[in-house]
Length: 404
Image (cartoon, rainbow, N blue to C red; front, side, top):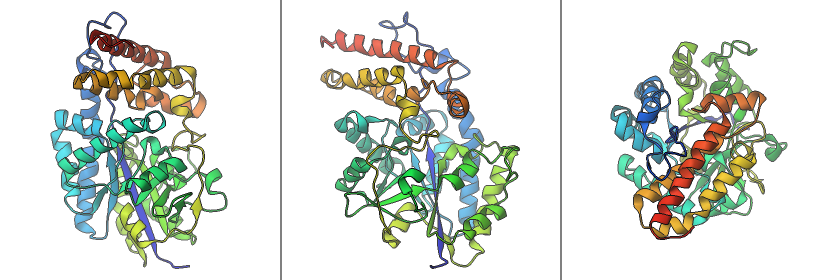
């Protein structure tokens, strides 16, 4: 077995348009579901500016410095259309910092849905439209055409891999979930079942979650985590070719605050990793281009990167969630008949997976994580606001003379 190892660092950038406190009395009168002025604490503008200051700007500054210092340092990222719109509106300096990072030529952008939706499971035509919209804005802002695909929440199955292959992608990303991998590990390139020309990169969730979730936990047996200790863990694994570290961009500065030492950790990681012979960094395309798949992975049922179950139950696990998303997608044909671009865009913003995540009624550890991200006091409040906006969408369709 070769001692050569590559860290494949992939970071995901996303912010939704949160629905304001939108009541039944607003429906049919006001159509501004996402208006920031109504809820100052959880307004989209306030959240975006806060995350830009705490996470995006300092992280991009650190990454750019590391690229200037280490020519071997590279990474991949995905960035949704909804967060790009908000960055253009409220934090243009943060958007410029992403563009500067990508201008180095050592940052690869990964394809996804523009609206961070679960459309693949409800409407293939809508899914493909959103993927195309995302490709367009990435080409416009970053002058890149994505070659690797990731679905919302790393939701993945065999059918999605076949779709990605048929649409010209060379690779696709997924969770490296133990029940799927069996005796194998996520530290190699694989081939999705039923495909010939596309590769599968699977997240090393243990090493990724050490940073994304456990880093600042003083009760964790490995706290404090240093870059030296972390690199020793990776190097100790002889059965490894590519170590896929997949996590939210907001891990740096927002989920793990600056005073946790997360930026110091990031600052020292490349030097610590590169001082070992044979170690390097690769973008997702580079590792795919240089590595033949070692085995085939069969995923007949959908997996994701969320919660202990690693399935879609974080978004579709209760009747509120299922009913809401089904009602929304049932409007597809009628909404397009209106030819009202503003109405169609509002409908698409309601597809963002976060809205259904906020309606989750799980408890214990996963429930705590859901509550942390939600701007609402309860899943039922999230559902109420969503359904009031949905009813207004129906009203607007009916106003066009189209029956729903």
